Image (tube, rainbow, N blue to C red; front, side):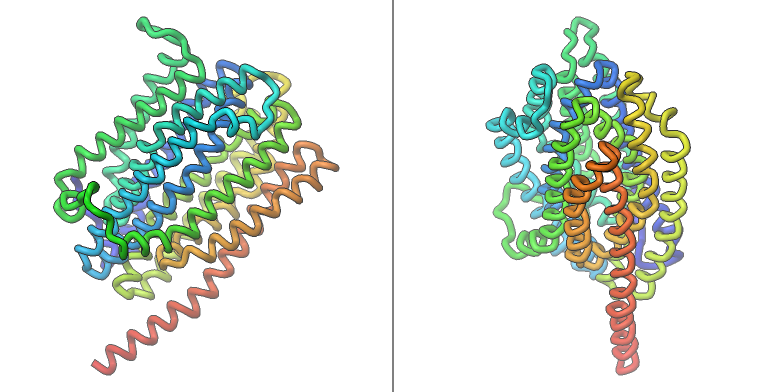
Length: 459
């Protein structure tokens, strides 16, 4: 396994970039992974896209559970490594994997037992779409453990300053998915055409291979992974700390996805085509937020390690440089969605009655991409400090405002009113969270620097 980066010393931008670029590339691989599904499923029609979109909402909801274990584990592992507490880092990593496995088994059981009722929430209009959605949820939800474990592997490696391994392993999964998707969806080589069910199987098989690849690659690491014992009794102390730090992010993620499910139910009132537009549009939009999340993960580990080492000035410089880069990226994504929406959306769905809806979606959401990048980058910095509550408060409050805003605006603007409710809330989230962090940074990190200077003077 490649040597981890030194995030505590040396030039900041090269260190951040060396860590962030593989993570961002991994995010782009994940985006390509999702878009590959959409391209092939889109060939089956908007109904198939709607079914995957409905089931995918619950997979998104489940990510809140993975986020608790991943975020808490990544932050505590990075802070422990920054403070040179290797045994604690190992204990945090072990507890993170154990929590993720437990949550995955629970969610998988729920998916198997209640798939019909869960899909029924969306009140889809076509029986075939409903059955496809149930099948997709049964497979991807029932076997979500591979997805969860992959996230913990990625988070732990990032905390160590190693992002290249995740990129390589995730690329393997993408290649497998690219091959399996058309084969299982449309049939061939003696395999029958399985449609949406085939897409679900391709996804789970690829995720399982990624999990196995992670295990094989990191097993030789003698810092953390070689010392992990997943079957041993969990450490109450380390598990509790992970839980408490990861809980706000998990609640934020699950409430965000729950609100999105309510919004999706409102969208369903405009027909299955509108549901398909949201599914495809959100995947296209992921070019901005998944890349920003990738950089935010790198910033998270950078801030966490330096917080553990009490390098306050280095944290401030790292955030400033990261924000400049993400502002440029956000402007590019906004321009892309605003000025070339039809060209992009046509790649996925060509149906004449659905295409105009997709163009409107991309243009309206394009306005908010810059602010979304600001929010995500700032959240990464906050979380690296172990302060997961401020991003959760901002996200939950302003995301919840989408529901009444969507209801009001849709009375005047129809379906586009719902898209505007998402854009307006995203703009405010970026502004409010960034302002909060700048104030917190000035107060808290400034105090840290003064205290450290006083300690040095006394010594």
